[in-house]
Image (cartoon, rainbow over all chains, first blue to last red; front, side, top):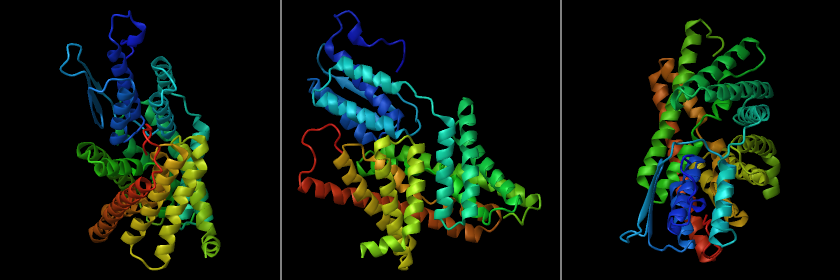
Length: 273
Length: 159
């Protein structure tokens, strides 16, 4: 939420109540979209919140990166909000917490001030514990590499590559000017390079299985599922946005891996592949 | 019979469990749902393996696995009162065609477009059957849940 806009509830009382409801629901929708909620769900949640606050005359339209809300249309006190939201990273815990907040509002367990406070709490990013996240990534990569038929040695190598990959991703995240697709290209290039270097030691058995295991954290499984569920619920435009995102991410991974393989084969590293 | 399957696929189950739980941690799944995420992924992978061993095609394997996993996720979401994405997204990971992306890139960059297009088609087919599986599973479970009135009336988290 834009920090210059104070929450209406804390302003002098001449502001009408429904403006506060509108800002609360816009904030809620923004957080849901940012953390990777699907469109139908966001729209449904906002409708329910505004209904629960006692304003039946409203309309909500949500896109993958935008929210439009109008309350009391056609009345003298009509108001509306438009929010632009950037496509963010998936954060399942925040989605679950937001879901809980919306349940509590609709069941009348918490008031609007309390709800707003909890939303602000969710908005505050909790910094990741980088090392444990890298370890998780390593275990995931190693596990998948073994799952797809690799030997134990491949799994151990993929574990190391996964740790390096997560650290590289953190490093790339900190540089604001590197956008989404270069990040994926660079990350997949790096992981292929590291796997090739590991192959040189002669410890692992299969180059391909290590790379396949290690690209799993980058593969757009989440965009794909979200886009399908948007289509299923009839939100074709948002579904298309997510589908294109999934295709482009898959394409950038392929380019990153491919360029590295090409380089290796140019340098005469055929034995690695 | 279930015990037999469990024993036969013990190795797959353990591996799928570890990797899916690790990935659900990576995507910040809530702590109390980690095990359920792992089970969701394991169900999908075991169905895939069984059908694959029975000689079914790639498309059927992916479709059946995703349908089973979607049914489980939706049921779990209604039961634990959490959004369905929490179980669905980590569960789908073992099935997402990462290998397809790799081999497609490999063959195209190694100037073997015939094999490359073959792999590209397989990747697209796998993604497509996952799509249809999720839609089919959602469709099935929506009907079942409505029939037995498992949804809490008027709750915000209609999953």
